[in-house]
Length: 299
Image 1 (cartoon, one colour):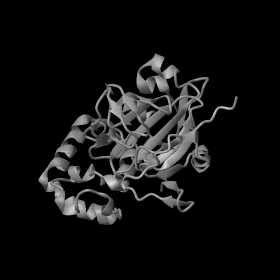
Image 2 (cartoon, helix red, strand yellow; image 1 turned 45 degrees about the vertical axis):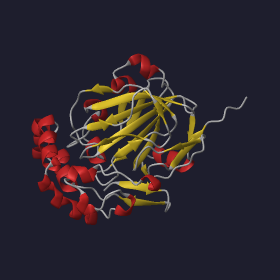
Image 3 (spheres, helix red, strand yellow; image 1 turned 90 degrees about the vertical axis):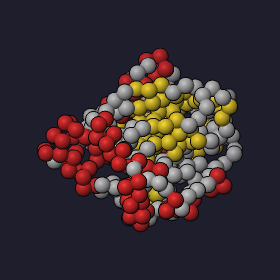
């Protein structure tokens, strides 16, 4: 059972996990763990499943998925029968007018529909602690110089479930630099897996880019691939003007994660998210929703 905080209803809820039985078997049983190490974390498994999800055959999964997870299709551009494959449905786009966010320059918005954990980056070791594992920012980025700029800052971890909208957006006006790709494995990013596999985010395939935000200094956007995520697709234009709310990219099938690194003393996270994160509990947030505000400096 994965408990998360629903801030709109101000109560805890239990997440409905796609493929929970298989996940538990894979990450918790001896036979499953052997399979995981031999096959599941490898690219070929994600690739084969990706091929199936891109095929017409996979269309028949769509309706069952929508009803099982109670997905509200009214926000999306296409009706359920208009998708050519499960993957096409998976990275479905939202209608422009349904993408609502505050234009206020001081408001920091969520880049995705997801479960959010806001963690302080330790200024001594430059690490974040997830599920009892210390993750070094340098290992995450593979760049010590860049990592150093985020000491004592914030890491915002947005976990996208298979049932979520799978596109991610920019949280401010600005300019985004070129994407750097880091090769890796394909472990699940579900909390069930995070408790069993040491350092999932550093092991997994990921990409990052520096976003020169107009109001929140330089933010590092990291996209982490996971089991069955064939790929991370970047759709933004490098080095050109970007508006708040604009799409940055999307994930193909699977659960995935977007991590934002924010410099020290730039934003104040909303109290409810901060309190839950301190207990190690994620908060569900929607794309464009306010999650914090700019930190006002007192002179």
